[in-house]
Amino acid sequence: MKFPGKRKTKHYFPVSEETRTPLERNLVERGRVYVVGIDQLIVDIEARVDESYLLQYDLIKGESQIGDSEVVEKIYQELKDSGRIVGEFAGGSTGNTLHNYAVLADDDCVALGAINRNIQVGDYAYKYICTTNSHVDLSYLKPCKGPMARAMCLITPDKERSFVIGKGIMNELSSDYIPEEVVKGASALLISTYLLRDKKSPIFEATIKAVSLAKESNVPVVLSLGTAGIIRENKSFLIDFIKSYVTIMAGNEEEVSFLMEEDDPLLALEKVLNYTDMALLTVGKSGLYLGSYCDEEYLRHTKDVLHSKSIANYNKYEYSRAMRKRDCEQPKKIFTHINPFMGGPGRIENTNGAGDAALSAVLHDLSANSYHRLLVPTSPKHKGEFLTYSSVHQVAKYANRASFEVLNQNSPRLSKGLPEKEDSLEESYWDL
Image (cartoon, rainbow, N blue to C red; front, side, top):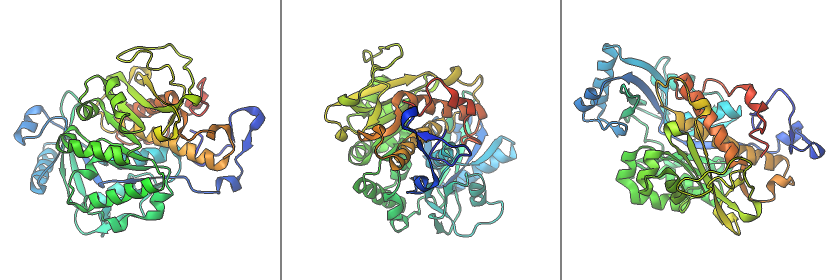
């Protein structure tokens, strides 16, 4: 992808030849473009188990649960002794997304959370730092006494993931470690429902402060749904929270269906847009949906075949760019759907991080829009108050491609950017 990251070759905006604007250094340095995310810093420990092992510890298949520290240590030792651990990675929903964003954008983002005060070579905090992209700014983390959190990711033969988490210091981020100017200057603030699970924890208070600052400064708040268990526990609270603070929501089919009480993914997506401005819905082997608003003045008809499911001709305006509903004089809901890239990987060993990768692509397009507005504020691209640089159709294609890479490499974090050939598509991600 060509921006906002620093590249070896020169690129120009807008796309049309007649109005090209060179990206000279003095333009690029007008301001810093970045996203900021709050996370429960955690290390994912992946292991292969059968379903009877989940029953042994009363774990709910496919969900994420908090476990007693002694139980988590016992599980870890059992799996380690039996050789069933297949990897230990820096994890966390927001952490994965920020890392992937940094890889895709080749530019900065900021992580907020709590980490060990004293870090030693080889410990979990050391591994977290070493396996996180260097563009992820960790200088604002809160140093705390105590162990890093661990998430035992138990993968059953059907590839379903079940998590049991040892909390450690993951909830110790306090509101005084929320840097106000960093949040106010961001292109987006990324959070997850995991931060809202324990309303008595310091990180809950810190999150509320951060989203309040973002709302005051018109910074989009992006919420990643965590797991169906959290939604079940806090459903009414989450609906009110989304209505009050969230600009973009992302989740999988099960999570969104449970939250909206709607099994049909397209109708569930439409319901989400009654509470927020944009939504990403991943549907596993069926790809992903993306929905948002656009003012009737800026609607663009698709050049592809019209499709009808539970909504007739739902993709009619998929070549339109996303907007906040409040910025539309005549708001229109727009939708797109895309099947897995190349039918998906031939063999999927683990789905961990696929949704986070898709969301990182969405964030990249948001920051690209901020970057271009900063560079060329008089461009026709910014006649309206758009959220994204690209059409929802192209953003969905990009998200789908990033998700494919994570699934294909069997790791929750991208090790490198997307292949260069992606820029040679008939319609570049940045052209619509």
